[in-house]
Length: 405
Image 1 (cartoon, rainbow, N blue to C red):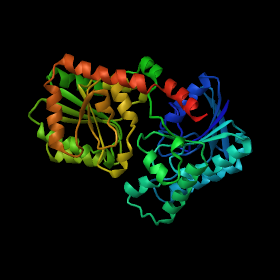
Image 2: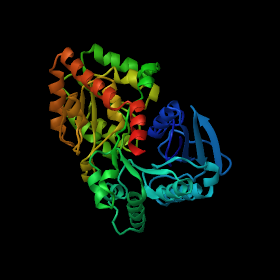
Image 3: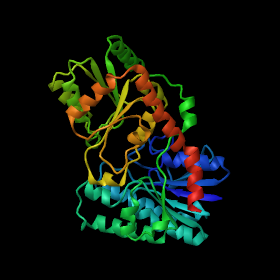
Image 4: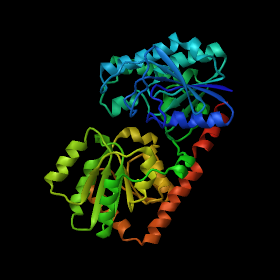
């Protein structure tokens, strides 16, 4: 079967996020399908973007045909990003003949505008059309970004979202409770398919890159002092609720607990300044590490932390990639996200607490520290068993095809 996956932001291990299109596509290729991924040459999510000198560029990556459409660079969420979106959508129309026909067309670019060229290609090809929803747009920019429902950008996106639910044969969502919203906007209930984010088990098994030497020595030194290591690895943004982690560090300054934040982001400098102002010596900031080093890095911690600021958008559920990595690391997890689902509770692999509460977080850390090493190990292993059973990308890729055909 010929599959066309349209995802503006699609990445790869070589380029960086986002990874889901790559992992699904690679598994489809292994299952005998021919897969084309159409993506923009520029995305703010990638570590680096492909360099193309013409309007389009094609390359093969692990059996996947990547069709890159040249797009303008941008910073932030202003007009530059809108121009980038428009250039990609128009490019899909302009280069549809070169992209080729398909038996299954998947529109999966976060924002819903790509459903229009996807529908056109599917109609021309007589193909099945699937709308894959990562985040609910335009609800996300309204509830997270404070945009008015009457803003012209929001109105256009709302029309595209409603159109997608009406014309798609199936609607795949990473969010387990999103069907309620989708039905309100015209989706027939029988179209809904829940398919969460996943983990690539063979990559975890093959990961060989070691912990960067400076970080390794620092963590070993803290362990030698008998400190309990709490780790966070990921973006440093407002939504990640990392000020709560610093608040907890302040409350635990006399408790032989060390909190380590690994990664980069717009809030990192502010977080470092806050920790310095509080005179905290039990908190460490480290640079981001490569994806291949993540298993070795996470293995050094006693407990891992994931959180988000409160937002009504999470009532439809969550499926964060970071949580999958944490579970694969087989470490107890403290999850401070108020959402429509609770994977940590489902897996019984840690503690779920209310977000943005430094005292609750400090208490959760001490609670896990009070357990024996064996008890924490069993808790972590339950998380690994859960993610292996429910989030293996080779299984998810097969389930995707089975559920949309």
